[in-house]
Length: 190
Image (cartoon, rainbow, N blue to C red; front, side, top):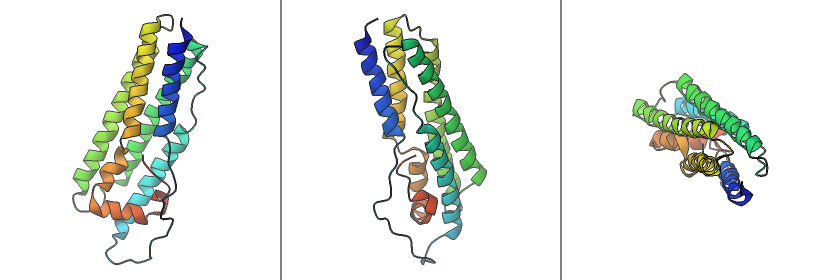
């Protein structure tokens, strides 16, 4: 087995994983004014609970797998396990958002449906990549490297979309609520 192409594929996977799991402090750093005119306090509370679910999922996903390109079988097992964890985290995120119910804003149902559709598509992509990687024989270099690339592509999709919070923040009332909710201030993307 040629270690160089596999090492490059695994390194790319790790880099995409790190990008997909990153978050940062809100650049404004300021707290919202209490009782600001026009603020939907129910939407702020809803958003705060959703952002807590997103944050918890990010903590779980920040524990990246150890991937050693010189040991393809162990690398494969680590990646399959991690993809399983990612799928579980997406399921938990969807469940957490659904437990909060429809956001208390205009067009809340449609906004929620778009967010859930994004989550479903992301989970499907991860599940497909996991199944292909699990089935790929490490002794068949071409098939194994293709499976690793497909897993990388699944992560790239997660890293280049803003996830369900983008869908939620596309609603102007929720966008404002996200800026007011304490648990949302430390999230960059989800």
